[in-house]
Figure 1 (tube, rainbow, N blue to C red):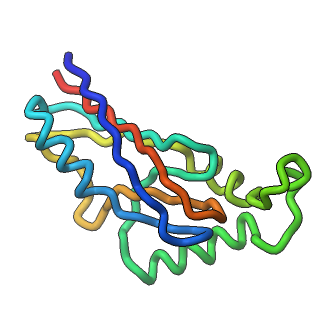
Figure 2 (figure 1 turned 90 degrees about the vertical axis):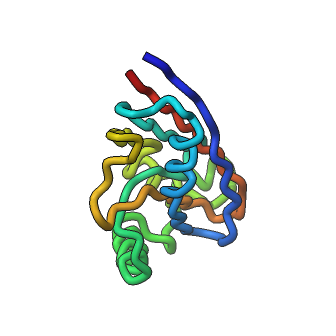
Length: 141
């Protein structure tokens, strides 16, 4: 078994929710590794206000997702977390915890095994622009 660890750095451009397709960057890491035929890509975002998931990366679905998150963890309420740090991103922590910090995607014939429309996305929920570090471990036979 071989394990190769890399990072993807993403600079968030928006305040509040930003969903960024990182599928191409992961595919590049697999191709550049030169070691993968069969295996797994494990992705993990560092930080407690972002998540990694998969979705159909469609502008209207992104709007639907934003509306769904607003129903689950509204922006216009006072979270207890705000009393701790005064950073007013309680909703960001809740959303990140619900979706989770990482995923595992199988690799076959040196390609991610994703559905036809499925993309790997970074979901950054924080209310500030920031830089995110995504750890990618490629594990192969």
